[in-house]
Amino acid sequence: MRHTIFYTLVGMAVFTASCKKEGCMDETASNYNHDAEKDNGSCEFNAPSTYLFTDANGNSTVSYSGQTDRLNQLEEMAAYAKGANSMNVSATVLNDMFANTGDNGGGNFTFSSSKNLKSKCFVLDTNMLMSFFDSIEVASNDYTMTAANGQAGTLTSGTSTYLFSANGIEYAQLIEKGVMGAVFYYQMNSVYLGDDKMNVDNSVAVDAAGGKYYTVMEHHFDEAFGYFGVETNFPTNTTDIRFWGKYCNSRNADLGSNATLMNAFLEGRYAITQNDYTTRDAQRIIIQENMEKLTAAQAVNYLDQGVSYFGTDQAKFLHVVSEAWAFINAIKYSPVATRKMNTTEVDALLAQFGTNFWNLSTTDLNTIKATLVSTYNL
Image 1 (cartoon, rainbow, N blue to C red):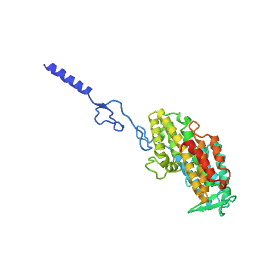
Image 2: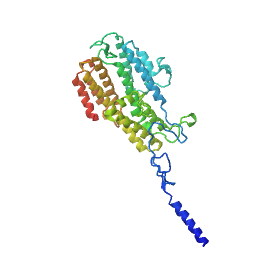
Image 3: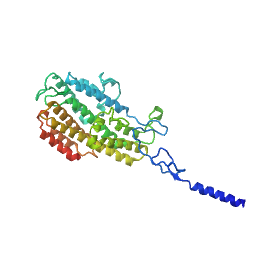
Image 4: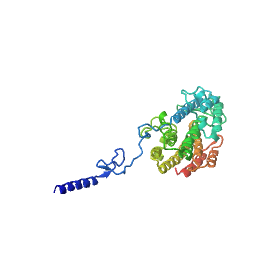
């Protein structure tokens, strides 16, 4: 009798153990089941809502300080160029800032860094940017003059004063947006999110002993994000966004670009931590395609502004047309595999601006706009 009771109890224990409710028992998982008593390996994890990633020991694996330095360099370089509306500017100074001579821009930066903009520039357009430095120096010699067709000088609209060359180009805008395109946009989309930078090691930290807890692949993806110019909790936080981040936010109402791009960065980076390269590749394509569309949309916005200012505010007209030219030029830095306009097509569109912006008409601007709207379904 006692044996019967013993075996009955054992059987009940086995039955009870085998009937434990299974499910995900990891509280950090998206499908965590607080009623589960046995983990069945079904846990699913979502990408974080902010660009913060750590290793198993809680060490941050995110690093893009070099990109932050370059954004800071362009910020100070652009401020110097825009000062041409009230002073002579020097091409030598701009070249020193571009190359970061002496690690402090030839003494023109307010901080020191070993990074520079020039070495990261799309090599075929380095000379183009440097020619803009020469052009703004020449135009700034006439900053006391009133700009007119054939005469460099300044024009004022409200509280804003702009320096234009004799042919109506605001070179301060071509310099700032030129670096945004030939360095930031190019490096983000065609270099760091390109195959060469993605098909690298993702198994070990670069130098954990030296505080570099990220893998090579993680670091490359972070560097692409660094050129975006947003905070880690964007778009919840739109404070201190810069360059591409600022324009992403500007076009968000039209494109939904804030969530689209930030989510792709988060999902892509998280996929790398999970060795999920299919998802990583899908997300980098989303970034590349939507950055190109954002660039075209911003150009369209400036063209629309140009039409509205035509004949009523020449200062604003030439200002926004210069910006539109620079944004269209940036499209050519898009990855070959995903771009909707190739270099020849971009150059043909730029040629429609002519060499003298004073001579542009609303018909010219609307014709350029029509190509962008049709190509990008804007």
